[in-house]
Structures are given as C-alpha cells and as structure tokens.
Length: 219
Image (cartoon, rainbow, N blue to C red; front, side):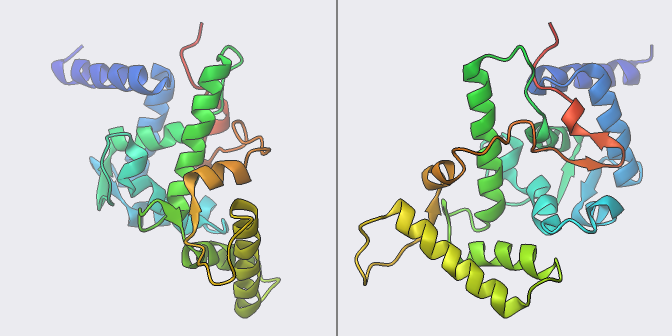
C-alpha cells in the first residue's frame, strides 16, 4: 500500500470515527463526491444543482444551501462556504442518517435535536436565531407555488395565516399591538414535537440512500 493510499485510509478512518459511518460507507460517499465534483477536491453549489434527482424537490434550493451552511458542518462556525471538501460533505450527510436499533433513548433524542436544528437552520437563512415571517413565507411559497396547484398570492396568504397561527400557539397572550418576531428553535421543537422524523429525514441522489446508512458503530 502506497503512502498516498495509506493517508487516504487514515482520513477515511478519522471520518468514520467522527460520524459513525462505516469505512465502506465512507468509500461510497467519496466515490459519489468525486462524481459530483468532476474528480476535484471540492464541490460548489453549481455541482449540486446538476443533480437531476433534486430537480422536482420543492425545497431543492434549501437542501443545496444546507451543504454550504457552516452551522451544519459541526465546526462551531457560521456563514456560508463557496465550496466544501469531502470532510464537510460527509458531516452534512450525517444529518440524514436514521438511528440504529441499538441506540439509547438519550442518543436518539440527541439525534432528533440535531436533525431539528438542521431543519431550523435551513429556514433561518440570516442566522439570527429566529424564522421570521419573510423566511417562513418564502418556504411556504416555494412549497405551494411549485406544486402548480396554487398561485403565488394565495401562497403568501396561506403563509401569513400559518405564521399567525404559530404565533397564537407560542405566545397565547400576545397583545394586539405586539409584534411576533418569529419562530425560535424552542418554538420549532414544540411545533414538531409529535412528528416522528428520525427515520424519515433522508436523502437520495446519485445512488446514495442515507436511509440505509445507520448512525453509530455496528456492534
């Protein structure tokens, strides 16, 4: 085994230790990454925009942006990257893995919270800790208007009404002249409290199916 191959295997092992992906899964992800990048060391948003499997996804733009959002790369940074390397790519992909049967209740809860934070970050586009009406409206407009079943103005009205409903739930005693600043992460958790999402939040493109890539080490 050459020095270069040994170094690559060491990098893969380190990523496996950090993310819980097996070495085989890391190799599969690396192959897909090189396909996306055109055999380059980094990928850009344009590379992901070429994925045909995402073309009809109503939140395609948010998914693509999420890969370049530094908040999702678990490095304690904020902002957006112009390009990302393989390590950052794998760290983002880790958010889409389902739990294993052997995970503890605490581990599953931690995973759920990480997935919720990932979803929250997708909608909190200005990183101010709240999903504002404008941000929420944009998401609803894209989801509804791209379906072709409803017009843009109707989508805006639905978004406004939905935001008012969220405000009435989270701040039930709000005064008539009080302004609802937006959905905090704590409110977001409450809104999705009854939703089982640990095994549903996955992504499929370029033959990578994260629903089969379980978190944690195999026992």
